[in-house]
Amino acid sequence: MTASSGTSSSSDTPSGIPPSGTPASGTAASRSSVSVAATKRFSRGRRSSARRRRRSSALVMVLGLLATGVLWTVLAPGGNAAQTPDANEAVRQGRALYLQGCSTCHGLGAQGTNTGPSLIGVGAAAVDFQVSTGRMPLAAPAAQADRKPPIYSATQIDQLAAYIQSLGGGEEVPKVTDAALNDADLSHGGELYRANCAQCHQAVGQGAPLTYGKFAPSLSEATPVQVVEAMRTGPESMPVFGPRQLNEEDATAIAAYIKHMKEAPSAGGYSLGNYGPVPEGLLAWLVGVGALLGVCLWIGARQKV
Ligand code: HEC
Ligand code: HEC
Image (tube, rainbow, N blue to C red; front, top):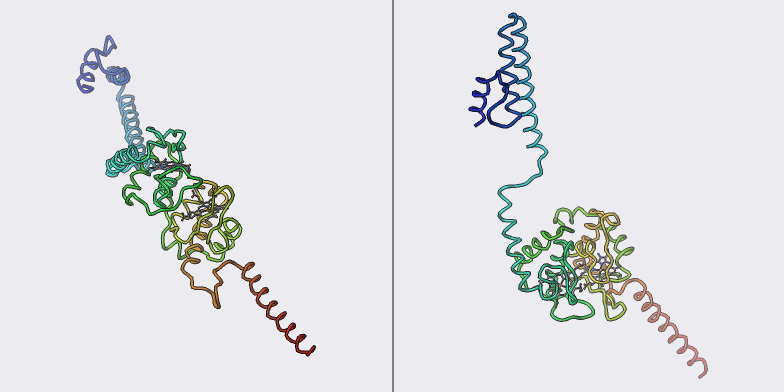
């Protein structure tokens, strides 16, 4: 279409009005045909310089197009064409699972109802945490959702997470690799754990009751990914620990420390139930001082006789 309009416009240049085609291509074509007519009347030198100018502007245009193409391939968002159908499929499957298992409490569009909060913007991390720890789907309203064996498979959880993520974005499922856990600084993780988590989850993560029938659960079953998800999404009465408070490295160090607490054998002697230094110290005092008192009483009793 552009080729035909170009030739026809150059044939009726006197009028200067291209019969059809876009205005831009029309004016360019008529301008070039005007200059063709003009160069015929001028000297050879003028003609070749005009041609050179035309040639160099064409070169600039080609270079510009090339540069745009290169920039596009370098800077374009990594939209992976091969990945999109899969992602759409996961969202579609996730929506079906959601409508069946979650919409009664969270609403048909995840906007929330009076039996469940809105899930728009909570992100894939919250869904992965809640469903992989079996907290959701909630069986019945209670002070706090309990950890239970999950009822959805890992694939289904990914699909549910993809659907909720597609609604309003939010925190993505964190990637915690074994390599990162192995490289993590355990003593730093221990310091952070004692400063941020131990007041609720206790010294070795055994958990403890909170007020109003709520409780900080034991951390012995949480996977490192669930630990980071809990920090980032703050389930129930647990506070959110965002990346500004605990960056990725800190979060991984805490996860590694919790994993280490679960796996490490006791440092030695009796663990006394791992209740931490204060109760263990207290027990040592009570037993030790009690034994000394007993000895004193025994000596006193013997002297009287
Ligand atoms: C019986 C009602 C009920 C059902 C069914 C249910 N939920 Fe929930 N959900 C709740 C309530 C109530 C809360 C808030 C209390 C809590 O977190 O313990 C909640 C919280 C959540 C949260 C945390 C939101 C946040 O702000 O971090 C997520 C995510 C979630 N639900 C996902 C799901 C998914 C996915 C399903 C389906 C597999 C589901 N829920 C089924 C009642 C329900
Ligand atoms: C204010 C008390 C509080 C603090 C501080 C706290 N948590 Fe929690 N945590 C909770 C409560 C309450 C829950 C249970 C939430 C629920 O069931 O919805 C919980 C749940 C968890 C779980 C899920 C356990 C499981 O297996 O189901 C993990 C993991 C966790 N917390 C890790 C942490 C880490 C790591 C820190 C420190 C960075 C931390 N928590 C700080 C109160 C707290």
